[in-house]
Length: 253
Image (cartoon, rainbow, N blue to C red):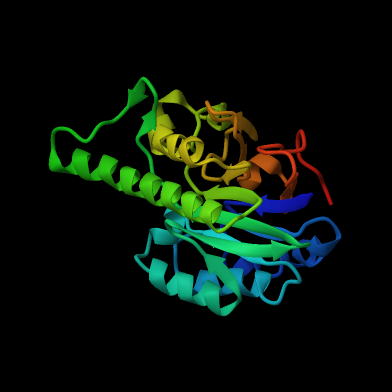
């Protein structure tokens, strides 16, 4: 059994320095890895990224992250990625990483993702250049995610976990205004997940959403935005010997 801790939308700044560190230091008692589901900073500055880096540097469990829209706001996403990498964080964008956890090969595939909406109420790459660019960006994210998952399968990973910022399903957006669903996620991410296969998908972004969801193919989806889970992180159990099995609900440390 692999214990996956995850949180997103921590939105750290200088005034939140040290806020999460005590909880993160307790991770080895209840989790094998920590996933950060984007919006780690408030305004996407390097200074804020250094606060995040200090929270997670030197932890006794691996840390894997994707960036969120807030982390892109100041056009310093590359610098933020470098700061986090220097602290030992693996930052993914249309890529994957393999971890050896308790003798189990665990793969994490990640992308920030983007919007576009969900089946029956989604945008298409037709019309104005701006609209085409919007949807084509989402398609590139989804294609990159699918490729990363397929690569992890080829690497023989017994467990595959998806990490995004934007949501792959509308289930975990319940509570948000319907009008903004197209800006909170895209069904293309779920199609990539179901097409390549995964055991668990976690995302953030939807602060007023719901924790539990499911893709059409039966993959468990969890919204781990901190305003939703209301704690430092949630922990989910994935059983390597039972495909796509996740413990019901989430655990607390």
